Amino acid sequence: MSKFTTQHEDFKNLQRRLLYLRLGLLLGLLFLSVRLWYLQVVKGDYYRALSEQNRIRTVDLKPARGLIFDRHGELLANNVPSFNLYLTVEDIRDREGLAAALEDLLGLPRAETKKRLALQARSYVPILVKAGLTLREAALIEGHRLDLPGLRIQAESQRNYPQGSLGGHLLGYVGEVSPEQQDEPAFAGLPQSSMVGKAGVEKTYDRMIRGTAGEKTIEVDARGNERKTVGVVEQTPGDDLYLSLDMRMQQMAESLLGEEAGAVVALDTTNGDVLVLASRPTFDPNTLSRGLTAAVWEQIVTDPRHPLTNRALQGQYPPGSTFKIVVASAALESDKWSSDTKVRCTGSFQSGNHTFRDWKKGGHGVMDMDQAIVNSCDVYFYNIGHRLGIDAIAETARWFGLGQPTGIDLPSERVGIVPSTEWKQRVRKEPWYAGETISVAIGQGYVTVTPLQMAVATAAAANGGTLYKPRLVRAVRERATSRLREIPPQDRGTVPLQDRTFALLHEALHGVVTRGTGGRARSKIVEIAGKTGTAQTVGARAVQTGTNHEAVPKQFRDHAWFVAYAPADAPRIAVAVIVENIGHGGTFAAPIAKALIEEYLKVSDTDDRHQNTGQF
Image (cartoon, rainbow, N blue to C red; front, side, top):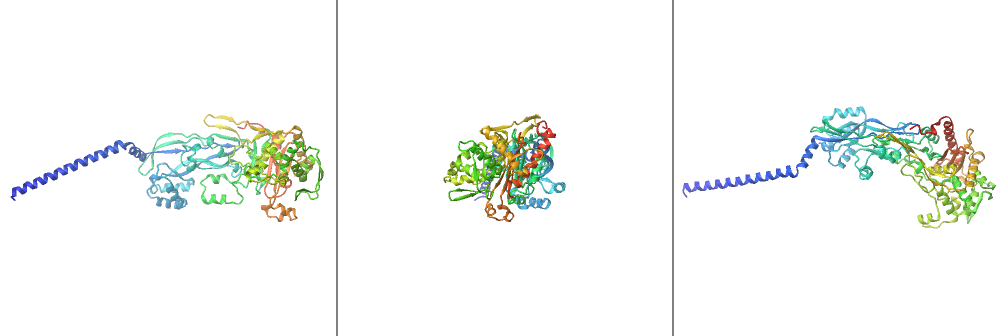
């Protein structure tokens, strides 16, 4: 092959390579053009948003919750300034290092921080790490800002309860909104880390008092640090609540209960206002509202005394002899009994093969209705139960509002049990036995009530039959308009007793205090009417067989009941008291009711604060 031919072939190969190179370049340019078109046109909005997020952030501005006052304007819940620590997950470069730093600086458990970060999706929405930083903690974080990108301290309001544990059950507490709650319509659109009501008034009126969140648009640098504010939409504070509660009386009631478990409820008989709603043991809502740790929560929920239980409306107890008000009413409204019907009480009553004992060994002798109520004669009421049957008693109990919610504006109310033949067949799939009525006739057996229900029933007996819905919130001040909106009282109907039945009940219940089992409620400044009750527990059997009451373990001792109203001739206040595992109602519960009633009426006679609504 000649030299010329070889050069010609080399030239052709070079031309071919150049062609391939040109084609490759053209294809590359075409690919880049298509890719640029895809990124800039098809995905342009997406990447533009990401770019904007790297530069512009939206920070939620949490509103201050509405204030809560008692009936005299005493402050029960307010807000105090707080430094809260937030982090933006997207800005974190080293999660392990961040968790270690927070443990060293703030004592936050490393495992909990890592767990929270793992659960949080990558997002530019800040999440709350710790609320209520001390000044020292805030200074530590600020001193390490360059080493801790993604962290930000924000000044916000924190819920505060100036009275501490006083009224903790009815006020409730707040906590961070959970992911599950954010799926509910009531919390739709609520920013992450928002504080919402978890119990009590805080929960019932949460939508009203939590306000409306605002937002601040800021410009940040590459490390997520704020550089300047772009725009602000101001938050709106929540509405203020004015309760019917008398905090001075509440304090007295809780003090009278002391360390004993129990509840005290006091109502205005003329409109259903809740004057006192005390439950012991209690808790400090400040503890539960300020970054509650898992360890503290575990300690509270495993406490055998159940401090989170609001015994006033969640405790379900046998009513004991306070239930004789209902049974007496059922008898007087029937055609099988009258106020003059007499029974000889020898200390026992035989029903089938079972002997039912009276609380008084040897009996009370011959009793009529008035005497039986005054002396709380069990045998007399055994006879009523035997004569009337369970269903007549159950119907009257429902007239008084037992076995159903009172409608109080608090969450998680329990309703107790009003047993009947239908109830037992439905719930236990068993027939009702006559002997079971005998126990119910003195408030034992299957029947259970809450202290709030007994206060409502007692108020109805006092005021002539009006069954009020307990009113805890009397008025709302709307922050947006400064308008005060009063919430009117509501009644749930009337107890359909004849006037003569009410008259006999008034006379007999007054007699309980002046000449009967409620003598320790006798007052020198006001005439009180009431009814004692002793709800037996399993330990009662040992007491009845001669064992000294003090020798019985405390958890097996009787519950002490007393329900009352005053003044006896023109009632203004109704009270229900229960003290758990302490003994007889006349001995332990009656003095508490007396002290509370005396204080209320003594002050209200010289101070019209109990009567007017002008405090709002």
